[in-house]
Image (cartoon, rainbow, N blue to C red):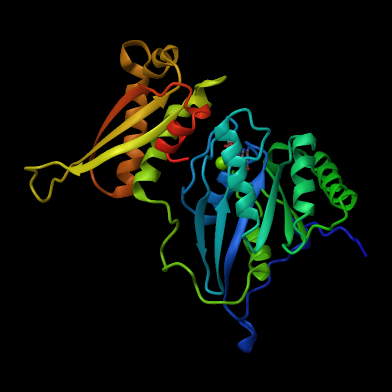
Amino acid sequence: MGHMSVRTPSSEPSEPSVPSKASAAHRAGFACFVGRPNAGKSTLTNALVGQKVAITADQPQTTRHTVRGIVHRPDAQLILVDTPGLHKPRTLLGERLNDVVRTTWAEVDVIGFCLPANEKLGPGDRFIAKELAAIKKTPKIAIVTKTDLVEGKALAEQLIAIDQLGRELGFEWAEIVPVSAVADKQVDLLADLLVPLLPEGPALYPEGDLTDEPEQVMIAELIREAALEGVRDELPHSIAVVVEEMIPREDRPADKPLLDIHAFVYIERPSQKGIIIGPKGQRLKQVGIKSRKQIEALLGTPVFLDLHVKVAKDWQRDPRQLRKLGF
Ligand SMILES: Nc1nc2c(ncn2[C@@H]2O[C@H](COP(=O)(O)OP(=O)(O)OP(=O)(O)O)[C@@H](O)[C@H]2O)c(=O)[nH]1
Ligand SMILES: [Mg+2]
């Protein structure tokens, strides 16, 4: 009873997967990743999907909506639902994001609770674990992220602490899995452990679909990701991006198309404008160059990206503005 089920590379010899008669029923279902902001949920989602479907950043509260990433395997379709980091809300946006997380974990087949290896368990983690404990019907996997950042001893201590946390709250993790998305350690193993927890059934998404994000949203997110780079303090939270228009440029030869994309980068205060735009517009220009490359790769077509910075006063706290920005 209550033995600790931890997955280490050595305890998991890779067996050749021999399909066994009719028992290998196809599975399909949903696993969500929850955890504090910055725990590495989106990076892990991308690593499992094998392509960027969710933006990531080294500031907390990067993800602002659920992002589905789809893993296609011969035996299963695993749909990952990356969620915003659960945190103590300070704005209406924060409250909305937390609501999104709670709705999501009530709907999935398995919950993956992400805890960074390089940070001791804190009140934020306990708070989330407590809420998870109340969801009795759903299996919960503890995922220790960013293992490339710690030594073996620190990792072992973290695994024990997480096991202990479950016991204190009266449940047992279905698994405790250390992974590194950046060093590609045990990422495939995580998928192997999630799949058996999915219900039997046919694929839910067409083959080849890696996400159900609308193109326009993905593009706005790529611009926001570029805009987040290097900004600090409150500014990352103040940035929102909306793609207003995408129109193929007229009078272009068929073999030389160009897509005009017009997007607004919103901030909350006029004083933030200068920082986003930068001296002589250099910063905004860099944001444009960086995101345009990724947008072109995503769409497979040349793009003219037109970025405008606009103030949406205190939008994080204003229900009307939030609605306009899609929250
Ligand atoms: N070294 C290392 N860094 C990682 C790993 N996974 C994520 N990170 C970094 O951790 C930071 C946060 O990663 P995200 O994936 O954006 O974290 P998140 O949990 O989605 O954050 P929110 O969306 O804000 O809740 C980024 O700077 C990542 O590059 C990892 O396996 N190893
Ligand atoms: Mg995220």
